Amino acid sequence: MAVSIEAPRAPRTRTTRRTTGRTNYELYGWVFMRASGVLLVVLIFGHLFMNLIDGEGISAIDFGFVAGKWASPLWQVWDLLMLWLAMIHGTNGVRTIINDYAERDGTRIVLKVALYLAFTVVVVLGTLVIFTFDPCPPDAPANLLPSFCTA
Amino acid sequence: MPEAPAGTLYRGREGMWSWLAHRVTGFAIFFFLLVHVLDTALVRVSPEAYNAVIGTYKNPVMGLGEAGLVAAVVYHAFNGIRITLIDFWSKGTRYQRVMLWIVIGLFVVTMAGFLPRHLGNVFGGH
Image (cartoon, rainbow over all chains, first blue to last red; front, top):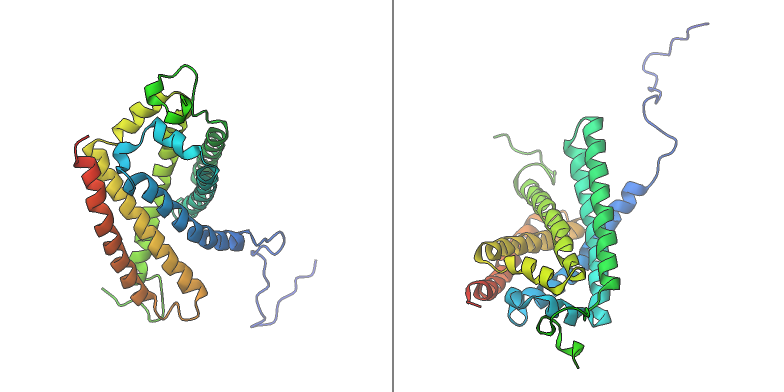
């Protein structure tokens, strides 16, 4: 096999850089962080106002408070949107942190599997809770329930 | 300490420290979010279970923790808007330092409004 010698100062051929299968997913992630971030400012500031500032704040939060809020479709949609956007935004942020600091391949894989597992469990659980919530469970004491349960 | 090269946004001074604070606050908020969805999920178990766990959020130590959490959220929110402006506004990079001081100013004003209200609810005796 003849060995060809490249001309001096010839441009280096790209052998290590992958040119196939490259995608725009990192760009979409970058755009998502900014778009979801702007929405989350509104959603979370609204959430904090309703739960920590309005009325008696944290000291008024109990089962009846949550049931009263979720009786309104507005707060159901609000909380559902906040759950999904915050979890995707946060998971993508932590993924970036893992990529930055976990240098060994094995460490990165383990951390990311744990991250995606936590994402799936929390999003599925939270979504089910919002959609299957019963504000008036039949065997619960009436004084713990919102007033509309007895009406 | 050597000066950061001119024209960089993320090495040295305001750009770097705001980036670091953004990363630290975001990381902390994410782990609170995981716990917060789990505690709220207790409404699906029973009113007693939910009230018992949310009751722990009302003690003074947790009340101070919530103040810290809100501080982290408020900084992350305002600085996130700053980052978005740096990326999408044509003059964003030129004003990134000024915008950080605006972020800090808005942070102070927001916390000055929030803290008395929240700490009053936590320590107000219920």
